[in-house]
Every structure is written in C-alpha cells, then in structure tokens.
Image (cartoon, rainbow, N blue to C red; front, side, top):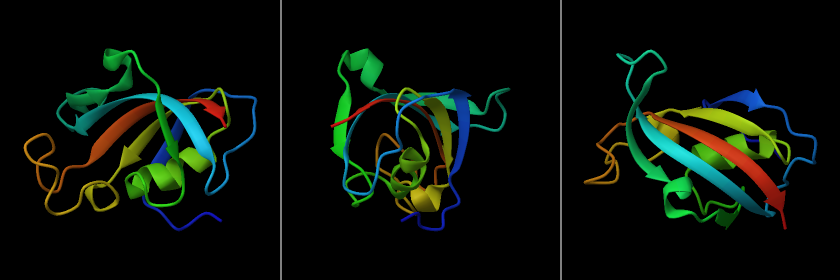
Length: 118
C-alpha cells in the first residue's frame, strides 16, 4: 500500500513490466546527486552510482531497508522503467545527512532503472 510521500517520480523511459509490491526484492541500477537548484537539471555533486561499481543494487522495497523516498518512489515504477526520483531531505537522510558524503538537510535526485523483480 502506498504511503503519503513528498518524493516526486518523473518517468524518463516507460517500462512494460509489473510494479513491485511491498516486500518484493528488486534489482536496480541508479545514480544519485545532491540537488543543486543553481544547475539547469538541478543535479549537483554525484555521490553514488551503481553504474560506477558495475554492479546492480538488489534490495527489498517498501520495508525500510532504503531511504523513505525510494520506498515511496520505486513501487510506482514498472519493470524496465527509468525514472527520476526527486527526494526531499526528510525522506532521504534527514536533518543529519550522511557525513561526510551527504550534508545535513540535503535534497537528493536519483535516476533509477528498475530492471527486475525477483
């Protein structure tokens, strides 16, 4: 069941598969940036990318294993979809951030490719 969220999902490329359900194991590739309104696409410093590691990210979704914005945004995606998740700080790493990588109160942007539900 979808929870109320301030995370905004924008579809970049349509998918044709099913939506993941709470508790499903999903396989994704992603890149994350600090949000920077001074940039044309709002993408500031890149802080993480599964592409750079040449490794997909596998996790259960909707059960608190990832930041709240992912638990809210990924279930809105279909397998094969590529989407942008604009995640406010309170649905990311909160007041404290994730030092030294993510400063306090940082809004984040992720480009996510939902590859598979296992």
